[in-house]
Length: 198
Image (cartoon, rainbow, N blue to C red; front, top):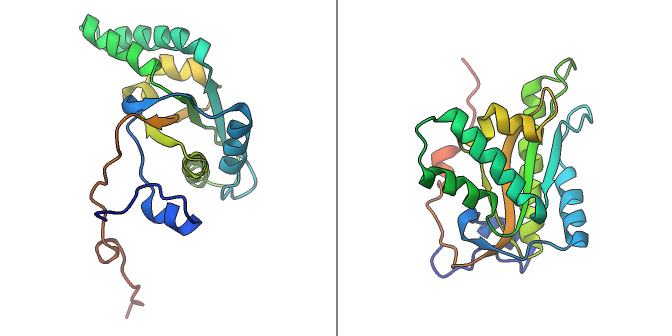
């Protein structure tokens, strides 16, 4: 894709063909306005959802809450790794203060419903993809990451209700450096035509 602009918004197909995530650490603000954020979240909710269960949530961490979020991360790190250095703790504070808007995507399946949890988790992933596309369609760069934080009991307890889990941390802002393409699979590497059994 040499010479092709990434996240090309000249048409819906162009955006889909050139969509590229950004690393959260290279994002700067400002993030979406209140109106834009409402639009992005409305787009995110228009996702496949077998049974109309809405098995996902969006938790917004406001700019003025980033210090408190960093404190949660540092406390969680102390529990995860008693040998964590000051540099490791500083890295968590940096993560909490990455630029742009921070939305935590939460998987919230109905465990007792006839719709399998796996299908509900797939719906959560689709909501995350719609969240990214909605933001990118408005001209923002987006990074979706997980890491140990997404699996930490303390971080989960701080952001989720019982039975929920973190599907990712989504940062929405503007890239401070030009995005670069990464290798993508060719259709022939990941697609096959079904052959009926004999």
